[in-house]
Image 1 (tube, rainbow, N blue to C red):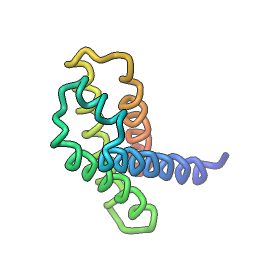
Image 2: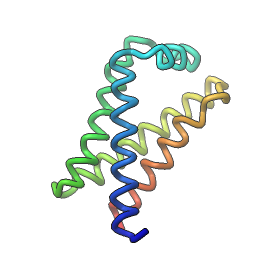
Image 3: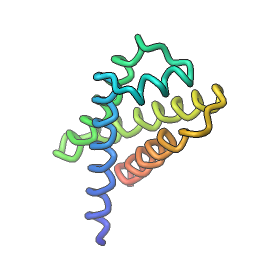
Length: 117
């Protein structure tokens, strides 16, 4: 796999899964409601959190389309968002599903690193 293919795949996968989880927040999907209750996030926050994820995912795609600085800004925002999600899980002592925000954090960080390289 070439560097450009890895670059494109990483950023695209990050954008797609982030947009998908944003949609789950907007619905709201039962797993989102259960998870947010476990970590102490009020249901009323879900539209805002979904909007932030949607903006980040869309920003990554807009950056791939060639709009300067939007991609790195979106990736940096997603890194900050998912650091907050991991911290929220840790503070709540919810370990059984911390892998989800951790994976999103790793992908967002990988996207940011690639966009800044």
